[in-house]
Length: 501
Image (cartoon, rainbow, N blue to C red; front, side, top):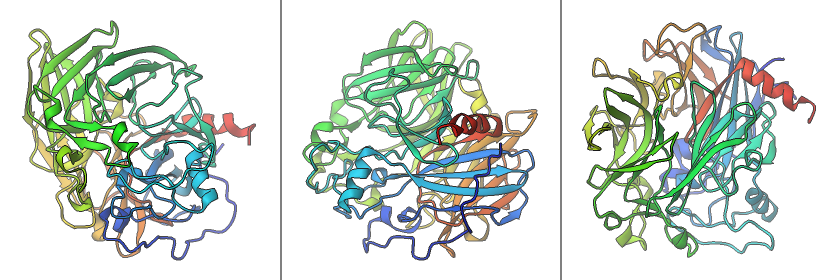
């Protein structure tokens, strides 16, 4: 079984596949601009050399509106339809495929030939829903990864969708064999000891923790608790003992979404004591609260671990996330929506309960990642994309590696003007000998061609010139998250789907 998709024709590059809806909205231009075609290509052009032990597939999902939004001024990046990209690598060769995630709500809009659903971030102008249509849209655009021999594509506001990992055809929603009924987060962690999937769901002020067995895909543990306010709970962290959640002024207000008003709200008055850390003991389900104070939000986490009586949590912190509650009638403009975020470290003294924080680096950035084999364990290295604001039309502009032992951040920009890198994904070398012994995979935007390229960097020796540049035949609109599937896991999943095709 090969991880390179079977060909169906000649490689083609669509002409005019990038949509132009004549708007100044940042999230509909440049690297964010929609790409209107599904693509596939084989034996892609490569500058440099793809390492021989890099065999498997990088899966990413882009935020890619299929139809012009009903209100282009209020459209937000988080609302684009999910289009999955698979870059398949083996023996120094690369193949590529993209497909829309065919959700029920997308089928409604395809049949209508236009956008129907209103925006949920900044509000908008809803259309008339046909009888029987889903009341809310599942955009399936946050994350993609293999589990239970399916490629699962996640969205915080609904169930994941299962795709065939080779053809990328949508098979339907996925509920962990009946274990999850409404939704689950777009972020999940993999327990390095058991391989089990760890994740959660956030519905209003209620958080539900889940653990899914890696062998049966059934839910083996769940626990619900109330945090008092409808926090926009996007990411979490886990250590060997705890699941870690931050309560911040960023909220997701379903009542406002139902009124077509901005649903992502920044409300500092909702937290009397400021930001708090909530710890749930993964084994006993005991909940403890720890006050940090201040009004800010976490974006994404690197990792968490316990050491010398402390819980240490690493992630990025932003000064505001959402529309201020006192200006919902005039939502934040796309060019000012995301203030710069910085790397922070938070500590909880497990004996006294006291929580503290410190800034780790002065380099603005987002989408932090580690070597996932160190999830819940002490890590030395963190990787992220920089957001220093070198251009008005991009959000990211470089790739960074932070060494927590030496307190040193290394930053590289793209070769030949490449910019807007995606979240980096760490892939360990075959027979890796250390935490950073591997590769960083990220997608970059080429302004000159308006296409994307996959860059393969040496994670231990980050340089501007990567080990390989894989030229993709389309632009992958700037999205959120993705993952790597090793060839043996991918081959097994493809074989399991073979009889159903």
